[in-house]
Length: 265
Image 1: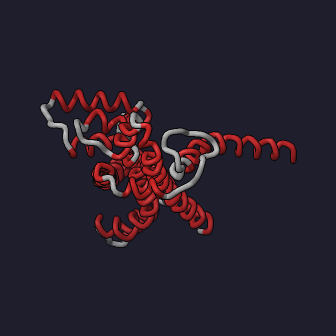
Image 2 (image 1 turned 120 degrees about the vertical axis):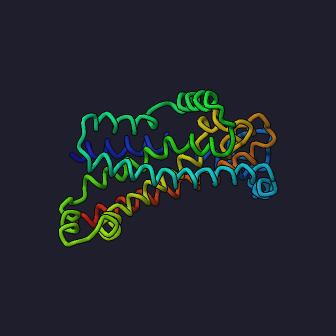
Image 3 (image 1 turned 180 degrees about the horizontal axis):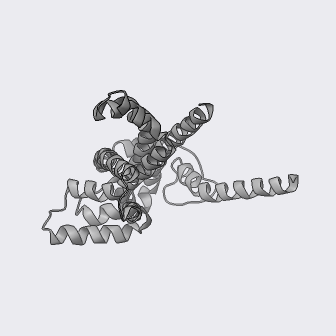
């Protein structure tokens, strides 16, 4: 039994190492003193490139665009994803599972397929590619994350609580405010955090819907053709890793907290 557990532990850490070593390499070379070569170990360490990245106006413009797109896409996803989850959970109609599958499908499709489809549809509709077309593109997969989290929470909640609230004379708004919302609030936080992280680092959907606007991932991609700017690119990539990791950790914390509360109850 001990050998089996040891083997599983070794496999787990091997997978974790394989997945995360590239991130540590990128972070390490954000501090290199030599911008022309990528030798290991780095010839020296410096914080110079953080100052260079800080002074790049084009980086700040891309960061601002990514943040605004992610924030608005997350808000749209929270509203639409929650309504869709409530409709699928509470309603019983023919084809409900098919509808649920269609709602989840965008996250399973390759980003390039979604991007091409959105660009073609928007082009046929005569839409000008701008900030709002990026938001629409990102919201298509952000909705899925919120929908999955909220639907899972609905299925783990006690439906008798809603029935009891209605029996005691509460109207629909009061039932939502005092019964439903407290039960799904942590799922909304987790889904919103994951949606923000996914939107913030999305590349392909943005490329096919944004026209000439550059979000931060596209800015990073464009910098790869400039070898002398690679340390600056690594600094920004370092920042992106941190920004996308924190919401995911917070989402995991919220889900674990809810599970512990459920077990205690």
